Length: 281
Ligand SMILES: Nc1ncnc2c1ncn2[C@@H]1O[C@H](COP(=O)(O)OP(=O)(O)OP(=O)(O)O)[C@@H](O)[C@H]1O
Ligand SMILES: [Mg+2]
Image 1: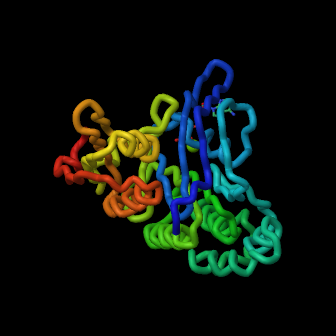
Image 2: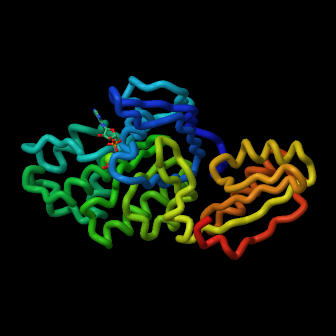
Image 3: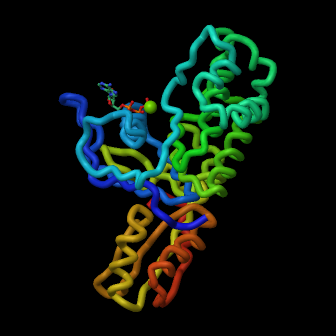
């Protein structure tokens, strides 16, 4: 895993006639990183995923996939209802991925349904079949819109395992979800889509998110770190202390420090853990 950027969005605007949905949104995704996105119904999460997947072309702003290939589960999966689960896998996937998809489907308990027509599948079974197809493709970026919808607890844990395995392989993942339980076990950061832009989520801040103050001895380092850490930053005090207050999920400190050191930002005076980190604000 490294911090190679594989997706960049800058100043993205999208409206549907009068309805302004995205208002200058920015986002970065690195190799081996999983970003969670939460937000109210209608806040624009699916719209954002469609833009990233290249399914929605009428928007303004900068989107760069850096030549990476995307696979996505966005809203309700479309299958050919008369085909069996196995036939749908064969129809939607190149041959080289089919065996993997079938074994993923079996690991999600779709086994006994594989040879039944999809018309007879429950909603959860359809979702599991779709996830098997998405994870079987060997793509650099995976987009998941509500992957846990209609999924039982046991299989939800299996999906978390698939997300974490994909991260280990260096894939970048974006998960849109209303289900924030266990989100800190697979997301490196959680952002909230509010008023058309992404912010660190208040709702998830008290999951397992910690607050740190990092003080830099050089103003240049402080300024560069500000650009580098972007959406992790809650507060930047430049006047006296060159101090950034940042927040991220438990275990995130190591990857932040690595990010700073790869950019040669090494002159750190101190890092203070703020015990109020679990509270709002
Ligand atoms: N094809 C479309 N034409 C017109 N308006 C649309 C279209 N798709 C989405 N919208 C509008 O854009 C806004 C954002 O919709 P979007 O589906 O992106 O929200 P969401 O955050 O995914 O919501 P949910 O949590 O309910 O899935 C909503 O106001 C919606 O009505
Ligand atoms: Mg949606």
